[in-house]
Length: 151
Image 1 (tube, rainbow, N blue to C red):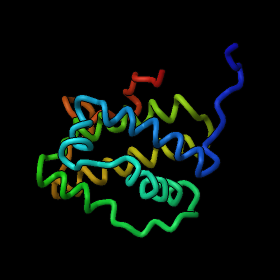
Image 2 (image 1 turned 90 degrees about the vertical axis):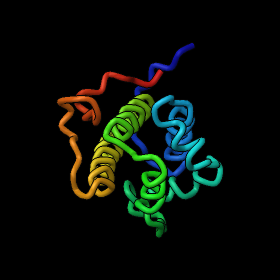
Image 3 (image 1 turned 180 degrees about the vertical axis):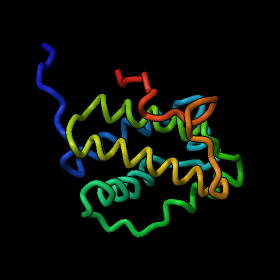
C-alpha cells in the first residue's frame, strides 16, 4: 500500500544522513561525476558521511561543529582533473532531484539554493573568478532548467 503522506521538510541530522546517503549513492554511480568520487578522490562513503553531514547540518541548522575547509579537497581534485561547469551542473541536477525526491519545505528549499550557490562559488574560485554559469551553452545547468527528478 503506497503512502499518500506528503514529503516533510529536512528537520534532523538523521534526515540529512538519509538524504546524503541517497545523493552520494547516486553521484558515485553517475558517469559524469562519479569518477571524481570513486577513482580520483577514492572517497570512502562511511568516512565521508560524518564530515559532509556536519557540513550540511551547519549550513542548514547552524548546529554542527564543521571546521574543515570545503574548498581544499575540491582544489586537489581540480588540480588532478579540472572540474568544469558541466560537472558542477550535473552535481546540482542530482542534488536537486535527491532533495525533491525526499523533502518539501523551507529547509529543503534552502538546501537546494545553498547547493547551487556553493557550486557556483566553488567553480568560480577554481577558475580564478571566471565561470560561465549562464546555462546558455554546454556546461552549468541552473536549477530552473533541471528536469531530472528522483525515482
